[in-house]
Image (tube, rainbow, N blue to C red; front, side):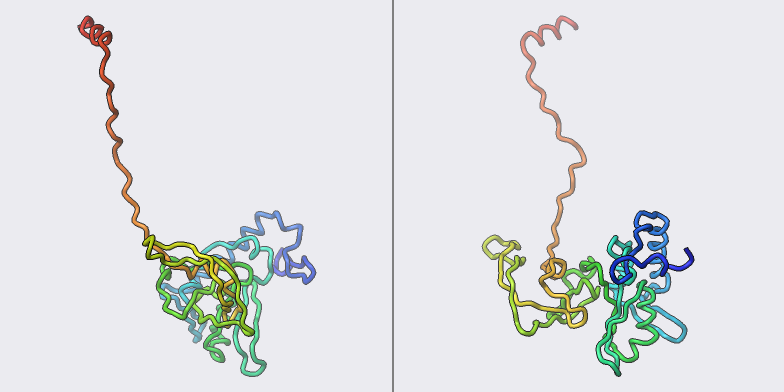
Length: 238
């Protein structure tokens, strides 16, 4: 096979991996290798350059793109898309087969007409990276699909749902899970809502737990008192 487009064509829309390649290790290795090359075009400060075009890739996107592809991203021909607002046609979504192609589209075109243009993961939601936990100011929240912080808004018409939420308890002096009725919030870009467990898990209060250091030596074994017969036998042996 000389073109990646020939690997796909399954499903009703022809965007899924063909069945004859579903168990091919060579195909999986090639797709994973192509995905790893995304970070090669981004420098240590997070800038992507293509000629005179420069684009600052968000920290969350850089950290998430270092992870390997999962099954849903491999079998789908377009696991990424760019959300942007065109000055002529309004809101648009352009699909891409690689994250590098999506970043290049933002750097060379989308960022000049829409400063909020961003890359979105269609198949997988990424949890908030460890360096950003507990550091997002209100009303910003982490969006697992956009892989960055967003200002979530209430859906219209307003609706609610019941879910468990992590809250601080003054009585127990720790965080506890409580069942609450929450308003539906959605991302203004990818329309992900807080009904998704990944969104709620990424935006829950994070705790720092101090673990006690493990004991480096074992405790001394207790010795039982010798019986009279054992004492007599030991004295006779001397």
